[in-house]
Image 1 (tube, rainbow, N blue to C red):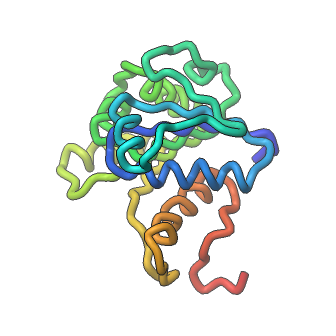
Image 2 (image 1 turned 120 degrees about the vertical axis):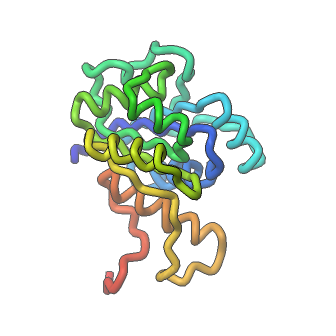
Amino acid sequence: MTNNRKIILAVTGASGSIYAYKILEKLHIIQAQVEIAVIFSDTGKEIWESETGSKFHAEGAAKEYDNRSYNAPFASGSSQYDTMIICPASMGTIGRIANGTSDDLITRSADVMLKERRRLIIVPRETPYNLIHINNMKSLTEAGAIICPASPSFYSSPKTIDELVMTVADRVIDLAGFNSNGFRWLSND
């Protein structure tokens, strides 16, 4: 990947804003030349505030965009955004993307990523899945998206909730093409 990265982080109305918070925090630390566009669904912003205890404030390379407006560079395939992460991804958002319904900036941006064959990482935070959820995720996988459920791992022996959350955040960061410097199974690094 190039040094100048342009990434979209979308936060939708599923529980799990802490994952997006930690991804954003780590992207600020590990990469100096990254531009981060942040989009919240209405419910996503409410849940972010409820779960993190604070309002979102764009810092560093992050800039917030209005989900109700298509007035954003990444709403077009001519943009140079190379990766989109939807975390947490509600099943409603996943369903709209899987069925080609671009009714807001998040779903339009995901549609652009798929049509341009760019990296789209979807982090569903739902349990259990019904057959409709599974079929929508199957359709997105076949279209080129990466489905990375927010399923923490335990083989690193996390001692805190923060460490447990980082097992998912680090995996997403790795999938986005960065070195998270997170725990590696049976690695001597």
